[in-house]
Length: 145
Ligand code: HEC
Image 1 (cartoon, protein in one colour):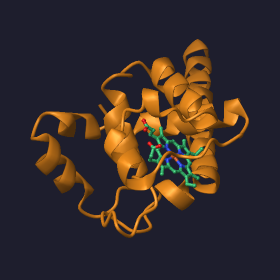
Image 2 (cartoon, protein in one colour):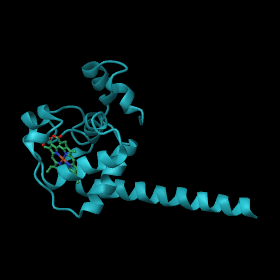
Image 3 (cartoon, rainbow, N blue to C red):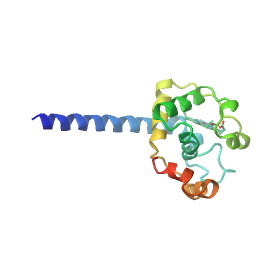
């Protein structure tokens, strides 16, 4: 009896976590994917912003803690600030991201989705990271930590 109860609680928790992640992905698709999605692939001349997987690579190092990561991304989206960038090269190439006045709790769900790391990557992304940042270095971060 008790065991069965425990299992159903675990089941519910897993389900709610899934919904949470799906919601983050859906919000990402509506709010961010136009710029940070797959369009343009790894050809930076055809892109308007870096792919989201690249954002994760740059943010997960200095913000390894989930809450910290979420706060950093949410702060950025509300008020991009070139003095706080972790992607200087991206600003040079694409110009500073415009501030997006979305509700903070929604952006936090997006950030949790990015943190979890199950992201669509443009073809050739992993090779690019390996080439630029070396094996074992940032590459380790790409396998969901
Ligand atoms: C209109 C296009 C556009 C949209 C929409 C957009 N971004 Fe960006 N974003 C950019 C550009 C361009 C950059 C690269 C330049 C920069 O870092 O400011 C960027 C960079 C970033 C960075 C790295 C910032 C840094 O320099 O350290 C984060 C984090 C980020 N975006 C998150 C998001 C999230 C989350 C969303 C959706 C809520 C989003 N962006 C929507 C254009 C966009």
